[in-house]
Amino acid sequence: MKKNSKEFMGLLYRLAITGMVIGTLGMFFIYFFGDFIISVIYGDKLSGHSDKLLLIMFAAAANNMVLYMVYVLTAIRQFKAQLIVSFFLFAVAFYRLFYGGSR
Image: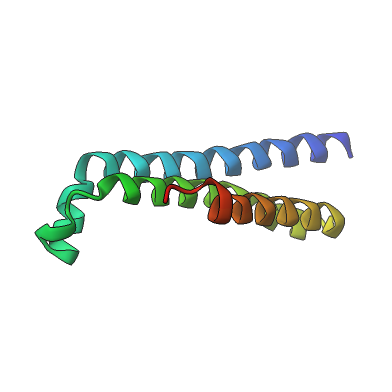
């Protein structure tokens, strides 16, 4: 049983690292090509707002990592822990939406 637990934790770490790498690659891509992407999709008028796209990509990267954890908690039937993680994420998103954003 101990070996299975060790293998499971290794898989969990690999999932978290994979989510972090995918999100980080997306952030680097947006950092270097964000103005170009915005100008292709929306035109030159909005191309100077790549900083906001980078913030959205950061949120997507964090969401990517957390979703992997929620999937793991669901798979091992840890619904109470999943509820706590989901509530915490909702509270952070709520705070950022109403109190932490730039106006």
